[in-house]
Length: 136
Image (cartoon, rainbow, N blue to C red; front, side, top):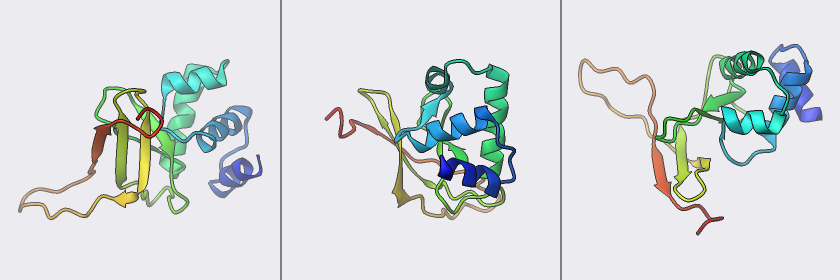
C-alpha cells in the first residue's frame, strides 16, 4: 500500500479508492491486463471511472499499453523510469498462445530503427507469440 500511495503522490494524483485499488492490481500482476481482467479483479467499479483512470495513468507514465498483436487492449505497469514526458516501454511483449496472457519482457529492448527518408517512426512494437513457462 505504501508503494501505491507514493506513486500517486509522486504523480500529483489525488488518492481515491479506485486509483489505489487499480494501481494495486497492476503492481500485483505479472501479466498485462485487459479491461475485462481489471473489472473482474475490482468487481464494483464504474466503467467510465475505470477508463478515465486508465487514461490518466497512461498519461502520467504509470502504465503503458502492452501491444500483443490481438484486438484486446492490455495494460501493464511501467518501469520506474517512466513519467508523463518520457515513457520507457520500448521492450518486447510475449503473448502466450495457450493461456492468452501477455508478459512484458523488459530485458529485451527494442532497438532504435533507422527509417528511410520521408518516414518518421512514432511507436515500435515487437510481439513474440509462443508458450510461456507456466504452460510449457
